[in-house]
Every structure is written in structure tokens, then in C-alpha cells.
Length: 107
Image 1 (cartoon, helix red, strand yellow):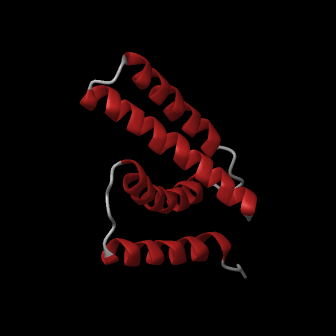
Image 2 (cartoon, rainbow, N blue to C red):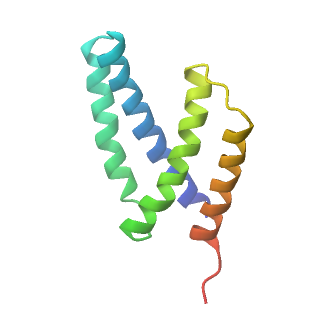
């Protein structure tokens, strides 16, 4: 279970970090190497996601939920975004959904 969550977390860091660097390059006038590193991280994200043992569809469904949570955390840490109570409620609901899809016992 921990390996599965660690791979999702690593994939999230690659995708969100890569997207953030591309954003900084294109929207904030950062140097070209920022965009290059962002592009490399985005490519790495695609590779890291394949490390999951589940099917493509299930992997991306769960990852989508993790992406939402990590994006809120990234925005709070790097952009000064302050989640309100509805962001927190939504995050809790998403965590419950991840638990059901990924870890609920199957018959």
C-alpha cells in the first residue's frame, strides 16, 4: 500500500512540478531552462505512472483524485493560496473515494 501511494505522490510531483515550471516559463518570463526542466518532468511523470500495478484506467482514476489534493497543497505552499473549508471538505471526500477505489476489499 505504501509503495502504491509513494508512486502516486512521485507522479504528482513530476506532473505538478513540471506544469508549474512550464507555467513560470511561459507566463512569468522565467528563463528557457525552466521550461526545459518542466518538459522533462512532465515526460518523467508519464513514465513514473506506468510503475503502478493496476490497470491504466484505475491508475488514472485514482491519480486524478491525488492530483487534485496535491494541486491544492502545491498552490497553498508555492502560490499563497489559502484553501477554504469547502476545499478541505472536498479533499476529505476525495480521500474517501481513493480509499474505496484502491483499497476496499474485493469479493
